[in-house]
Amino acid sequence: MPSLRCLSCKTNYPTHEKLYTCPACDGLLDVTYPIDEMSGERLMSLWDWRRASPRTIDQSGVWRFRELLPEATEDEIVTLTEGNTQLWEAPRSAKFAGVDRLVLKHLGMNPTGSFKDLGMTTGITQARRLGAQMVACASTGNTSASMAAYAARAGMKSYVFIPSGQIALGKLSQALDYGAVVLQIEGDFDDAMRLVREVASETPIYLLNSINPFRLEGQKTIAFELLQQRGWQIPDRIVVPGGNLGNSSAIAKGFRELLERGVIARMPKLTIIQAEGSNPLYRMWSEKSEVLAPLSPAWTLATAIKIGSPVSWPKAIRGLHCSNGTVESVNEQEIADAKAIIGSDGIGCEPASAVTVAGIRKLVAAGEIDPGEDIVAILTGHVLKDPDYTVNYHRGTLTYAPPGGERISIHSNYANAFIQVPSEKQALLSALQL
Ligand SMILES: *Cc1c(COP(=O)(O)O)cnc(C)c1O
Ligand SMILES: [Zn+2]
Image (cartoon, rainbow, N blue to C red; front, side, top):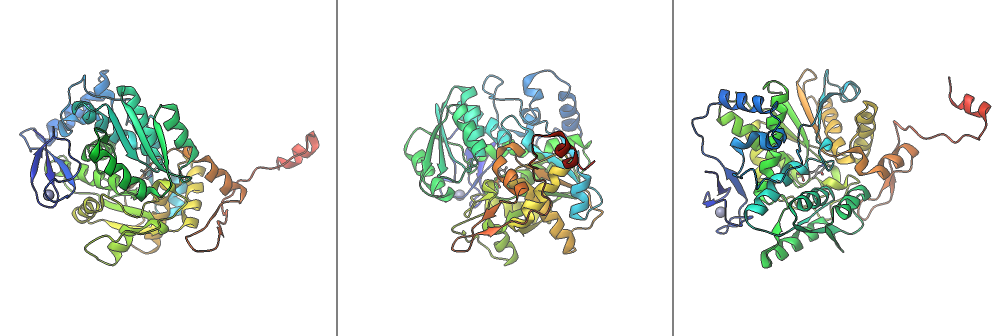
């Protein structure tokens, strides 16, 4: 049976206890599974067979892999048949980044438009197993959209704590539509996070931030599904945006579990990319420090990764070490240009996702990535989550102000501005530039 194990003191706890961190030392918890006799070969053929099965739990790109997920009966599982997101060739992004070939896995194609759905199906299912009727999270947007949707499916009440004025409108509208109680906190994400943890510890509300180990279990299936789509061929490198560091930790855990069970023979290099104004992991990594120093205030226009005190950093560091990975940091201009290039591939993504292509480009230029590597970059959110950003970039009106600094204009190097034309055919024809 799976159990919860503390990352620091290694104490084990049963999964039916409502725990977020270790009661003994406050360390992060991992869901761990016994390594049973089922071989890697057997797992692969079972999982491949399920892709063609019409059962809902087999069609879910998370629950298809249930041999390596927390226990739940079919009745308990709350799913929107998440996952099954595409792998797309991105030739223009590859050329921009300086690599021969680049494949993007677009997790923005999930039911609520971000990878958070993968963790929310396991998180809300665990909430149901524990008998919770109320759930809550602090969010920069996508977590709240996803939690609100899955809570609605499960008939639970949901509470969302968002930092005021710092959330993309597309995401806020989703939380409202799915019926969450939305509380705007006069503070930043890290304040909202601290408050929701305090509230959850004093009430029957079940906390669904990524400190919750059950969310990471769903997100680790990104590694499984990615390999399954590639016929179980391992890429050399996997590139992921880093905010709270739950997703990068989860993906590394997924690959490690497959390695331990003989499904794969080596780990792809985990490569985490952060935004310059919210890059505490990058600083820690390049300074070779033992602990992460929170960054306050954190800033970036990529609000999904605007986080100065990422909770999952010890797990991310573990993933970097066991995969021979690395961390890079990119600035606002680099993010904005990379996003436009991804758009020019006919794909599109929200700003936080674009750090991947920007980061690959930087690592190639630095000689750290070989242009011939087999690379998969993870796009985390849908292009329609933050249309303001995209329109401002193409119009040449995208600006940002670092704390205490002057307002800076982003250069719209790949702008595709709209053209004003009089309502007259001749003017229109000349504007078409045929
Ligand atoms: C949540 C989120 C991230 C950051 O993921 P972490 O697990 O917090 O590192 C990146 N991009 C998007 C679109 C997100 O919603
Ligand atoms: Zn402990």
